[in-house]
Amino acid sequence: MISSGSPEILSYRHLLTGAVEEFLRAEAMTGSEIARSVAELVVTLSRYREEGVPLSPIVFVTDDSRQLLTQVGGREIVPVGVGPQSPVTIRNALKLCAPLAKAEWFIFIERLGEMFRYGLFRGDDFVLAHTPIEVLRSITSPSVRIVAVAQLAENVIELRGSQGNSRYVYLSGARTEVPAPIVIEKLVNAATQDVPPPSREDVRALYRHAFLEMLRLAHGALVAVLPPGHDGAPYFVDRLLLDRPIDLTNLIQRYNESLTDDARAAVQASAHLLQGMLASDGITLLRSDGVVAGYSAFVHHLPTQMVETTNNPVGGARQRTFAALSTRVGETLVGAFYYSQDGHADCRWAGDKA
Image 1 (cartoon, one colour):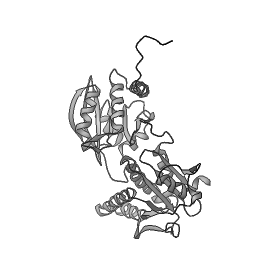
Image 2 (tube, rainbow, N blue to C red):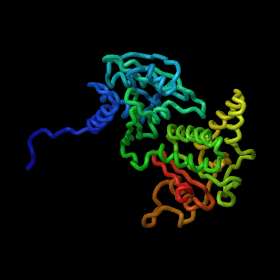
Image 3 (tube, one colour):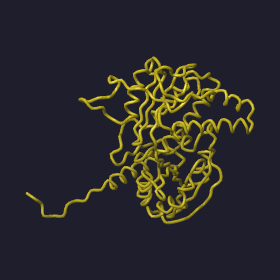
Image 4 (spheres, rainbow, N blue to C red):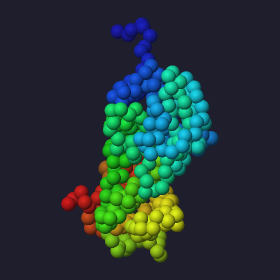
């Protein structure tokens, strides 16, 4: 029997707002409009663009901007505007602040009574320093009220709170496998497996910074990690090897010993160069002793190395290449990593087999 009443209207925004409200309650951030406003942040940041250019600012919502700076290692604040607590103010804040929130700059939204004050604050963009959201990921403090909203990939958002709660929000059919930042840690382990302990943590910090920035830029990437002293021949038949491989371990040791501006600039520049390689076509070649060996590498796929169902390979070229690289992990390679534009990431590391 067909009902004559009006159909009930269902919206994913209602479901999302309810989930965000539950998350905020666990973070002791309650109020009539805060859930709707943070839900607006999640939806808007999932595919944010200005003048057709994709932007991926990290936004921190807080009850105390001074406490925010203290907790996450921020510096000066640049106030931009004020508005009522509402999704409209959130959209205005992003429009005015998102084009500026690059490199060391982050957006803050502060609750003041029934109003939002918004603007930017500065972090430290040095690749060996922890970013504000990395610091927030390590905080578990019942007395602090800070929530970060960050786009990890198109349609993939991380919610992170200062009281230790976190959520990964997948929109528009994005994959829901292990979140990319968790996979990144496995790649960091592979790329620093043979770095001497005095420098290992700093090399890990540099790689983590470069790899997470790769996620924010929303392009695909492939990485292969070679053993120390290897150049990948003959497996990588087409590759651009650096005549002078970038020895990150040595560069960081020199900086820690001298603490000069030149040594700092050399470390920073090497990270930027690595980010450019990760954004290039082909495979970026690293060594497990903290050396960047080359980029724009390619392999020839054998039919048995393709991921298949029936007679057709599944996935794009990157996924098939990753399948081929994975067969070499533990033999030719220490590790292999794959990241697609839709936010899916996977990593194989020989250390997992130990």
